[in-house]
Image (cartoon, rainbow, N blue to C red; front, side, top):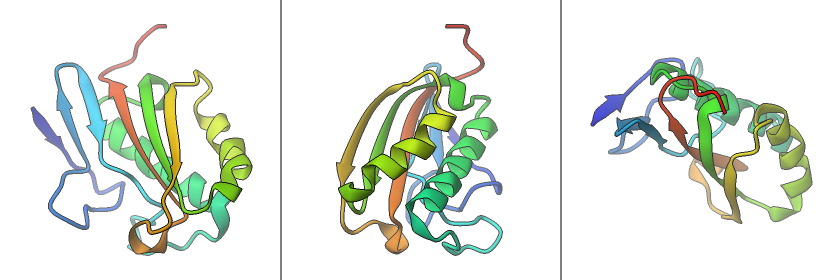
Length: 128
């Protein structure tokens, strides 16, 4: 196992790693829309927060030698399922290969975020 850590995504705010690589896979911790440059959630609204969250997820995957195209499964947490359609609109732009996914409502996400996404991805570029 290898710990993945990058300054291009928010630092962990607890006793965990941004991701772990093991047996050809990357397992990310949940990413929220914290701007890594400021340490704050500057994005307003579900669409902007989803964009920042996916950028953070992509940075962690990239640091591990992977990428969004290598994601096989995501778990998504929304503060309000009423935002599901707006969330999907942004999400679908980044995950064209449509990995497996679970999406649940979680009213108390870290730092008051509207969205959190974690992923499991293959290490290295895969030709599907």
